[in-house]
Image (spheres, rainbow, N blue to C red):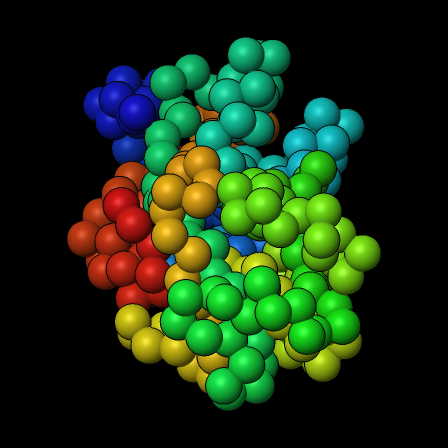
Length: 247
């Protein structure tokens, strides 16, 4: 967990004097909340947020190859910890900003029941998931199917997206009748935006702890310290709850 006073002393010793830019790598499941957070942060701080959305696994590779990101908002806690161990982050900057929830979703009403029994019926042609090797939500989907003893039976029906965003798009476009997505992609204000869904019980997959970390490139950038502090404030917590994240 973060030690705020230590983090901000390390990042900037003089406080925020001039507005600046902060480049953020954002896990695909967090795209919608981040858009809202960035707008509010810019209004409140004067800093500018430039963010890219993608899979956590791909961001790791890009960061190791010198991608110019200041902050990583990952979809897991393992990748930021790995970068920290490898010396690619600023000391004491890692913290859990949200805990994600997995949802089985269909763009069509009435397809997914409130207990996920549709998986056992297997009357669908395709089931969308994110790449479990790159996306933590994909790994959670596989774990869920294994816990339900359905993975082998449904493996041939799986359509694998590069990220959770692509997995959701497969369902939205009708390429797959249903799929495992992040709750934040299909819920807003505590309500399902469209279609039908089953919120997967937390006991069926390991907690999706999503960690933030300041990367080495962000050293000395006051916008980095300001955004990480903002991420822990009440305004952001309210946004996260509205998208279904646990804190």
